[in-house]
Image 1 (cartoon, rainbow, N blue to C red):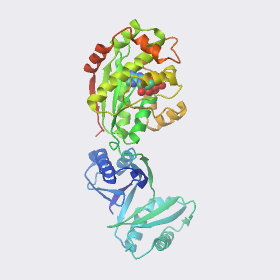
Image 2 (image 1 turned 90 degrees about the vertical axis):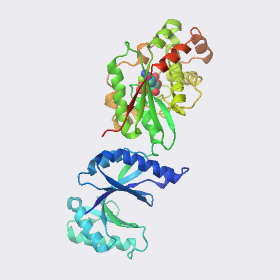
Image 3 (image 1 turned 180 degrees about the horizontal axis):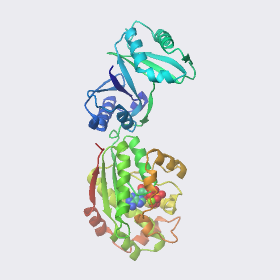
Image 4 (image 1 turned 30 degrees about the vertical axis):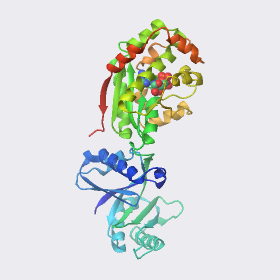
Length: 392
Ligand code: ATP
Ligand code: MG
């Protein structure tokens, strides 16, 4: 018996997008995600992608696990391949679902006949196959409203398929269909979640992180690299830019009023990020900011930050509560890493009384005491790049 994986992408996801591009990118992402598990044949038809393993050793469980993190997939399932013949379909269903049906109490059959040449109509397939299964698994009962197991038969162009459970996919759009953006990635809880959310909308993400040694430790940097690793299964490969920020922070401290430290720092971070965006052809910035979470995230402060941004800043968490953000960070498994207690460059020079509602004119005046331009250039020049790829 041949077992395959069926991948379904909702037609809804295709709205406003060229179907061909969408499928091409999705198939490419799927291939990259499972290529280390063994040889497969990947085909597509009728808004479904078929993955047929060509090697005995192909790990189906691991493949399912990985594919559940690929954006653009609405649902997926393992299925047995049958000939388009009712006798064969019944046989395969009994054999393939034996264990599942032995332990279930109730079931129903669901048939989808996209090949209208198949002689039996869907209700007839359901009835007949239901009868066969009831006979073979005599403890079972039919429950059409709330069955434990839904046995699905799909009659398609070249074959029929039998399976018992669709698993929900990650949804969203395939990464790479929406362009490229730069995520400002700290070691905190919020920014990895922000990156995940924009990747879900099909954006290919690079990440930038600012370090201030010796005020911030090597461990703090490793923590952020670990976060990059954690989100690569969703984001695909990530180019990670690490920017030395110490001198800039020291000059902010030496030359600017303390109440504006944080907001000036954030403006300079944005300026550096944009220089790298220009070089890397990123069309937007992404941050983990949420209105009112801290002093640098009041509407006034966000406005002062945006004043130095010439490209859009995406803040997918802007209207979310911390508890909602934490829920996602647990789901994507970044939470435990994020809460490790290492210092961030933001926290090292935190003013005792930050200005909660800074006015742009005051911030600009506070910044004007010092010409940061050469230091920004130098920071960009000394930026280190590391590429995170999907694991083998
Ligand atoms: P997070 O949990 O993402 O760290 P936060 O609630 O701690 O967010 P801030 O420290 O004010 O908030 O940072 C706001 C945003 O600025 C972060 O979400 C992130 O996008 C960016 N940011 C902060 N510190 C850094 C850093 N050292 N390197 C890169 N980006 C940073
Ligand atoms: Mg932070």
